Length: 111
Length: 112
Image (cartoon, rainbow over all chains, first blue to last red):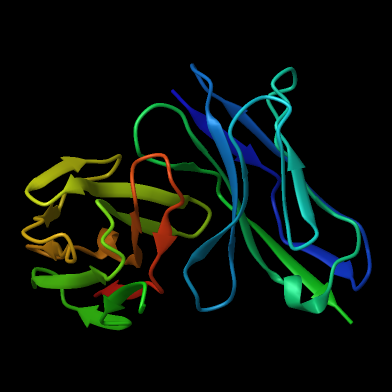
C-alpha cells in the first residue's frame, strides 16, 4: 500500500542554517504530496503541496519539488529561524480522500 | 470564522468509560475526518465523512463510532475506553476531497 518515509528527528539547527528534511513515498498511482507543520500545542497546518511530477510547492521560504523519478518530496529552507521550530509531516493522497502521513520530523532551531 | 473547533482540550478517562469528542466547523465543508496522533506513528485516519448522513472507516476504526447528522458537526464516540486509545485526536475538514484539510487544535485523551 501507499506509504511515506521521512527522516528521523529531532533535527537541531542554528538560526540561519540550511534545512533539508527528506521524504520519500511509495504509491500505486499518481499521488498529490504535502508538507504539514505542527507548532507546539496546535493542530496541523498545510505548509505547501504539489499535485504532479516536477511541481514545486513553496510557502514562507520553504520549498519542495515533486520528483517522480526518485519518489521524493524533500523539504528545504535556505535560512531557518527560531520561529520555524515545529514538527513537520510529509503526506500523500493517492486516490480518495484520506491523507497518508509520515511519522513526523521534529525541528529545533536555536539562536 | 472560528474554523475547526474541538472540545474538550484535555480528558482523562478510566478504562470502560464512554465519552464523545466534539468537532465542529463553520466553513460549510463537506468532508470531515478524525485522526489520532501517537508518538512515532504520525497521524492515522479513524473515520471520515463526505457529507451529512455519510460516514466511512479509515485505517484504525475499531473502538470508535461516528455519525454526521449536520454539515457542521462530526462527533467521535468511544463506547468503552481502553488504554490503547490514549492519544491526541485531531478533527479536520475540507471543501471537497482534493482540497486542503483544515485541522482543529486537538484533544489530548488519557485512558487509565
